[in-house]
Length: 174
Ligand code: PRP
Image (cartoon, rainbow, N blue to C red; front, side):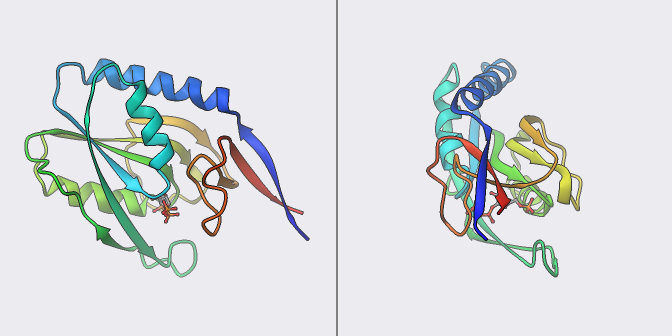
């Protein structure tokens, strides 16, 4: 029994939504001192498209987090395997994430980055998947709300496969 993929968001739909997000972010942060912090690895394609769609240059940094037990015996424990490298103090920080699932990763990261004393701290995610949300995290910019389904493509993986697909697919069991 193989797994079939069904296209959920086409290249054109993604490009249109990324442009809309960039316009909103560009409006809200005009004249500010914006640093975008991307959550590796899944965000690498979305963030690359988003920053190039903005009407002004921004600085970027990245974190990589590792969560244990999410989806199984959820411990909620999140570890930082790569931290930010620039100072965020008194800066306007926007966390950029590909997908929010349980919310545990972002809840942890928001608290962690808040300890760097940024001037402001908000969140932009491409996909808000409410199905398995366990902790509420306010999302300031959302690309696509998605009820459920396992998604791959446009940075999202399944066992490290499918990240480089330009569209977003939902995996359907065959
Ligand atoms: C995914 C996604 C988020 C996290 C969301 O990362 O990119 O960081 O899971 O899950 P949560 O809301 O339940 O905490 P993943 O662990 O798959 O790593 P990757 O980005 O390297 O693929």
